[in-house]
Image 1 (cartoon, helix red, strand yellow):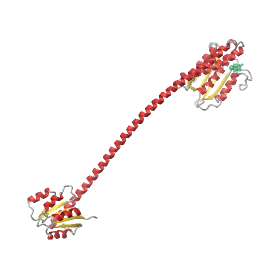
Image 2: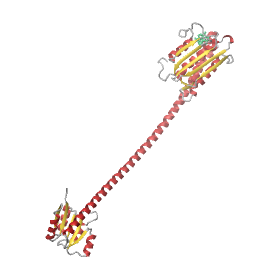
Image 3: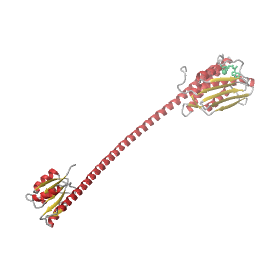
Image 4: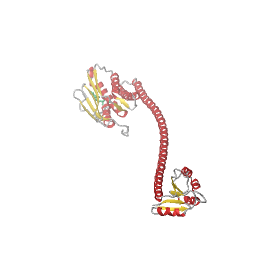
Length: 391
Ligand SMILES: Nc1ncnc2c1ncn2[C@@H]1O[C@H](COP(=O)(O)OP(=O)(O)OP(=O)(O)O)[C@@H](O)[C@H]1O
Ligand SMILES: [Mg+2]
């Protein structure tokens, strides 16, 4: 442990010796000088915590010494003046110069020892307090600079984020605009596909003028209906909100209307019974589904009710919870011919129904012929990209 250093400045060696003798019993390092000049050198060299100072000394007296060392309240050193001649004026001046105690000679050594202990203890408390204050000021400064830095960081990050938001908003606007453009384009494409299908249908219509054979005429009409079935889908698509899903109930109503008109059938003769679940279906599924319905409904209208016979045609579409659909087309007509084989039928219609169900929809087809003809098709909606390579 570093000992406390005490500097004794007195021109009487006997005084220095007497004080040193008593102080050496304690844990102090003692230094001494005979005048202010020596004292100054020692003061700067050893940095004492306490100076015991005589006033009247040769070369440089105590008051001059005090002026030179310029004691301040924050000084790490305190001074006890010990003088034989000190007047009250001297005492006043010394206190003005920052001393902490004034003792006159002849003095009581124990009184001086008490003052020494007291002054050193007081100085240490002062020094500790000062160190603590410095430490606190330093911490406050660090905190302040940290806070300033933090504010700076927050400001920078906020600015970055604002920039990011602006950039993202602009990008979103651009993407929205391009999406809108593509939507318009897609709508236009569906419109044109529909128009082109109608043109092909009109061409067929024109050709029918030169056909005399009723069977061939029928074939042309069926083909026109198939085209119409697909054209209607594209029409529904460009009228839909998202251009991907078709409102199937609306589509079917239009398709059935068209077929009744096309075969000049009155709903008062063949009553139309529809039960179509409110479902939207994508184009990939809607095309085969529409074509199947076209074939089955056309068949009912063409073959089931001969000679103006009355009856009922039912079309229903239900969606199961697992996402599968069940399409039913049935009529109360004369029923299917015996031993009919959908796969190997010589005619196109039912073969098409079978092929579209199995190959395009990857579904199952069942039929029976009790009290008319009934067909059930169960299928799942095709997801984009799941289609075969041959379509
Ligand atoms: N709902 C039905 N009621 C009675 N007979 C039917 C019915 N559906 C089909 N048929 C009979 O089955 C046959 C085969 O039908 P299919 O649809 O394959 O041929 P199509 O209607 O004659 O001609 P297309 O190839 O133009 O459709 C029909 O000719 C008809 O005799
Ligand atoms: Mg047919």
